[in-house]
Image (tube, rainbow, N blue to C red):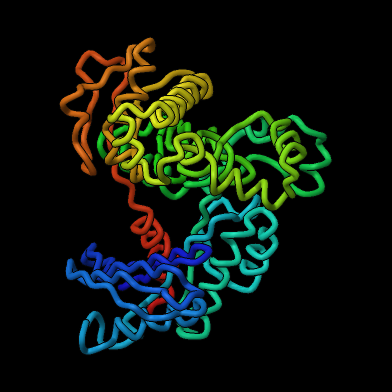
Length: 398
């Protein structure tokens, strides 16, 4: 059974074709700048990589091009589109409607549409991907896998904001959390590594977007992102938590409208806003090493806040057994991992600096005398989406 996994962003599309019986990724693709004349597809078939320049004005055209390539004689990925048994869609926001992945039908589509106000950039893209697949592969079952679903176990005391309660009653204004697919994958992988489920785990998904999740016995009990992915720790271009009164103050001082202020907090803040160097943490690490004070400030401020949140989540968990790092920076940025863990030595958390220098591989990096085990666990959201899709649709296959 072959499952096509689609992750639609505001102007990009990530995809994978996975053979579930062989546990093999056959194809990986990343369509960039959808909606523009310079859109292109990075296409990887069983390790053979190529870049294809092909305009895609919308998701219909982008997905159509990918499907054409899959059946083309040049790439010979599959003989026909009927080999695709099911499609799994990553959907960012499911609100309070979904605690698990679900087969997509009209009611599910309507529920995703109702969450557009909570995720105005992401949910429309997810819906566009669903609609494109309904046109191009009308008889292929589809599954929605929600970033928010894993966090639906967070207790009310953790998800309610201390604002007038009617905001929650009327519009469901509350903490939802994101990166749930990644946090869930890492929690499952740690269970496999340790052979135990009764674990108090803090997973640090660190990349351009970043969030922490407190996980107890495989269940999310708190997370850093909130109503939107803007909240929590500082990110590549997002500010994370700030004093709310800063927002109207800056808007008045600079005569900024609400939409522009949101753009600043989402696209011009975080490590980029403080350092002024780059949106790429590798560049900021390099200039920090050269002694640039603002780069050092951006990186130290982020590590300090992450360590503070880890301490906060130790309270949420009633203790801590394991800390994990995943995501682009979490898996590859040994400097950031060391910077964070230096702040945690007061808890008896220690990492081996030589073991920590590894990049992108699963490894235990804590010392033998550390009171808490620390691991790098490369995340794999796509395989989790594929597994959920397989489980929900295998009974439908002929």
